[in-house]
Amino acid sequence: MTEAAVIHIIDDDESLRSALMSLFRSVGLDARGHPAVADFLAAPREDAPGCLVLDVRLPGVSGLDFQDRLDELGIGLPTVMMSGHGDVPMSVRAMKAGAIDFLEKPFRDQDMLDATAAAIERDRRRRAEANDDAGLHQRYGTLSPREQQVMALVTAGRMNKQAAYELDLSEVTVKIHRGAAMRKMGARTLPDLVRMAEKLGARAP
Image (cartoon, rainbow, N blue to C red; front, side, top):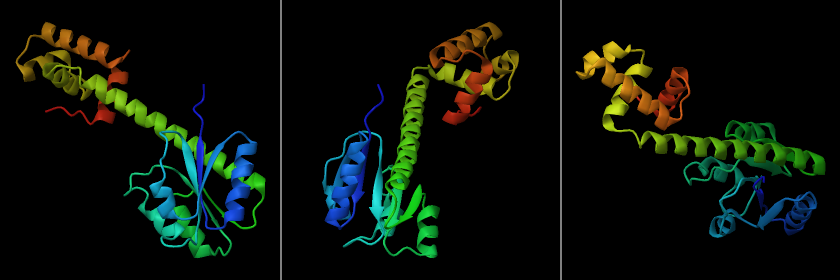
């Protein structure tokens, strides 16, 4: 079952917030409205995929300034920016900061739905990659120190006998550790193990 997405709308125009929440809910999406950045930050947030629909001009922290601080605040949600007074420098700044789209008010409902669908899909991919990375590190943590050493050497291109010489082990022992590392990491082939080592940053001594 696909995990339900949540769209957070930050705009001080109450009528627009309500209209957008109705629009998103009409297509089966959960939507939350916030009049300012401070209200969004104070509200509880589920661990779920989603996105931010963010007005450029807001009371307190502006939408563009908040977008610049998302990484610092540990908020990974993609953004869709909107403005009633958009200009080219403003839209360029938003897109360079990673916005999915920059919509000028009034915008078509379908344009907003398309932009938020793209943002939610990006967030789903980000979350899936984060889960894959967490699982990879967890599996790597089950390797013994010797298995980690052998994995680093063989994925750096060493032959079994070279790894055995560097670690002062027999070649048979290296083969055993290599097999154990591949099994624990879930690698079917050596190239699979090499790709995992690259992601982990496991380097040969």
